Length: 355
Figure (cartoon, rainbow, N blue to C red):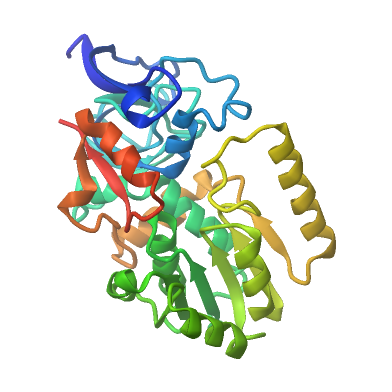
């Protein structure tokens, strides 16, 4: 095996072109636990949280992160080494998943990473799924599963059809939200809010109806006519404006579940003590006084990935969300991917192809 690897390292905070360095001689991480495996990465998914971390806006939250570091959580690849206690995987297995706590470990934006099979989300990759599509799962699909299945309590009565609204339906998390909403019950009515230009993509994922937020008249008509009609609102954009407009659309026993929280695109601007206090205060108020249960996703169902989420890919109930070749970026051009993510206008998931 090689003694060094190619890796995209975060070396300083700032704009992507300054923050990241493509290192062709980075050290290869090694197995340190009997439950770990070494994975040769073929593709790695890119998430907005990594863009925000690299910008320095989240330094107060990620104060323990030491630079330079290889970040990245989502991966697909081939196992090259296994720890002595690993039972479910062997050398040569094609796998996919997501690391837990990726900002404090050796991440996935590199040719190799170490995965703890007892803590991280890792499963065997379905044969029909390309490495690039498999790498689009990770954080995005886990967030959608948490928001709809766990927070929405759909697992309790899966046979009951529901009406589900997904905000930001064409993005990385929202595109999985649409699919999971249909996968858990094909009779669910799923409505997606996105730009009209992305309507066909979201419909292809299973949405029954699209609301173009840029069409003011149509959007306002939707808000007026759909009050008390949804079982779940799954918000992938965040902010008080959407919450104020959409919470009244929930039925009496409906649930508002958000991947972002009360600040729109949280982390895109500097997060200091004032912002943290503001978020905590707003979350507290919603917990105490909101008309409906309000869930802010801060923990992901890593333990459910192998047995509950991965089988949805295996059965083809859901699929990867890499829209086309333009969403597959060579690792050495990583800064370009982060610049695209920072616009909040990407469709589906962007992934790194790692040779």
